[in-house]
Length: 468
Image 1 (cartoon, rainbow, N blue to C red):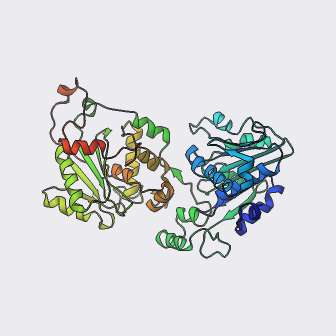
Image 2: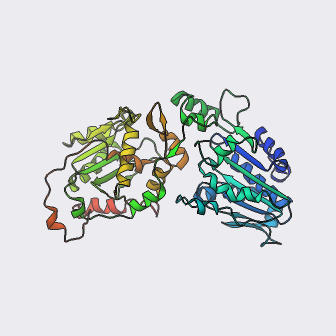
Image 3: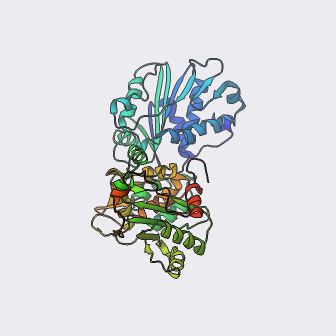
């Protein structure tokens, strides 16, 4: 069907799964990064919709956005390659249905609640009953095992029922790990990008794979997961939950609440043309809206930092100098009489027994600040960077996944998050400040001390929900 309907030749591992599908109720794909697993799930979805009478197909993924951007987009992509599918089915953002039988012949997009309530999570795939039923679960490496409970129950009914799940093996728990442990029940297919394996997926760039192994080593947790397609010695855990970040962004403090805390600026300097330079202010428990610029040189960048330094009466400024790239900004600021501190993300942490490097230490300090009541400005990009960055333990130390992997995952560099965590680089003593008692009666305006030019840039340079 794939060859005739779409005009493509499946990779060997994809052909194996397509051949096994009619005969296996449970199929699990343990995949490295980028082998074409979402395309395979889409092919199975269209095959089931096209060849079974009045089928019901439920699709889910680790998040609603991931489902929309991944598997659901793949369904649209392959439908557009087939005149038959275009004439027979209608695709919408949440449902695909047969034009002749829209109420009984369909595929639905479903999301599961991440609140931790297992009963609600178990209801994600509930309520489906049909003679022909299929469950497609994408990115299942991070999906709780309980999400598949209702799907498992459906296997016992009807004429033909299947569960197909696929994901990166990044956690030693959950739906994918359960399949890995119970291979007597699951048909498990392992897909890797190992440059030394003749059976590797040809869709994974061999140059990228070799680069990752050279940079991080074959025993790195992220190489094991993303290149070799195997479970690591310990799980890759999310740095912080979405609910915690959203709660932080809903908080706002007055100057009375903030007290005499130091004003600190974190500055992330763009490394490449598609990245941004970000200046992030934080004073105690309140972080403020950041300034974001593209394509500015060290002289221009130092000028922006210097104006904000003066306008906000900053007590300390930390600039990312990983690899020496921020040196130009630091030198220019020193010519202006300022004393910034350069920080290398790979440098030794203050607590080397706990953190693998300075980057891990700063990120965990920032996460603890959020959990203890810190207030963040609203930002979609900052939210995604914090909640989608993972960590693991290596040799007893906390270690974050490489920034290059985070950038690949997000589709952009986590510049906002890096600038934010830089405000936790070192302890900063506050300068003498006026009594907070006198300003307690007035609403705090963090922008009132800025001159007009800087204020306008500061408040309107970047709208995280309206684009750059």
